[in-house]
Image (cartoon, rainbow, N blue to C red; front, top):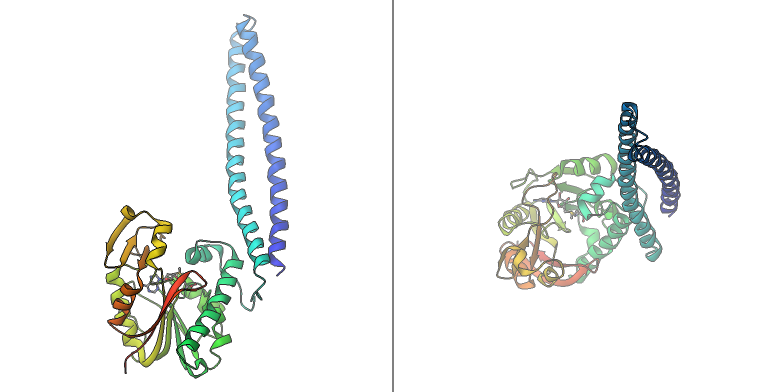
Amino acid sequence: MKWPWIRRRRCQKEADRLRQRLDELKSQRDHAREQRDRYRLRVSKGEGSKPTDAGEIDAVSSALAETTARLEKALVEREEFRVLHREVIKDLELAEANPLPLDLDYPLPSSDLLWRIGGMRAASSYLQVGETVKRDLANFCQMVDRDITKFQSVLDFGCGCGRVLRRLPDIFPNARIYGSDVDGEAVQWCEDNLPFLAGTYVLPEMPPSNLKSDSLDFIFAISVFTHLPLAVERAWLEELRRIAKPGALIVLSFMPDTAAAEHFTPDMAVKSEDGFSFYKTMPIPELPEYYHGSYHSDEAMRSVVGEQFDVLSIQTRAVNDHQSVIIAECPS
Ligand SMILES: C[S@@+](CC[C@H](N)C(=O)[O-])C[C@H]1O[C@@H](n2cnc3c(N)ncnc32)[C@H](O)[C@@H]1O
């Protein structure tokens, strides 16, 4: 729990340094302005008719321009710092508001990797969401009367940099745990930092993957089917069916269509039909071009997942009080 405070102290030091630098630059700029105005006055009074004065005005003006440019650069630096500072404050608020045991059993991913999975660079959000979703997953299994200690092989489909994956040994003590994602750098991070993993897979943008057929007891995907166009979703559901053992449990989070209105206006939809809508979001260069925002009504999700699996339950906004979840079983 100490690390947010340490970050805040570092930020404070950086703020002091920037403030000092800005003061220095401002006083240089004011000095240059005064010099320029003095020369201008002399020239306007006819006292500066000598060619050297005109030259001096040029020299002072260019010194002023240079100082102003440096000042502007420092202001940009300060703005960037302010953004970082706001994130640290958010970190602290989260840590204080939600005193979950923060797991630092494994290292933390880079802020770029954190950004890619959650749009936040704050590590406390990564740790807290992981902890909460782990408990949610255990609840979902219980809801459909599955004894999770019996699962032998578990796959986090679209694991990113391990937000949930890193917590899995707590709830699946007897399982071989695998991570997979299209983001090779994130998968490599998991491979390098989560020693309990039985294996990792870098997935192609479209199936097939090199995961074995009929090999998994439990497959889950958090915040993955919230980003795929319908054709891509169908292709991956078919692939999940191939790699799941008969009787395997499948848990997939999805964004309820009611949430679309909170983020977009209807005219922004790229596609909208039968309870499914798709919206363009900011592209993430490291992820497939098709990766944007998708929303399903419960019926639409039931229908598309039902093409491959037997649907057991849908729970509204049950993942981290945010996304909905569909729980299904692979037919025997
Ligand atoms: C919002 S992040 C969630 C990551 C992780 N499940 C979590 O909850 O921390 C979505 C993840 O889906 C991955 N992804 C995107 N397209 C995918 C696909 N076709 N198959 C598997 N993963 C995919 C992204 O690379 C990203 O890591």
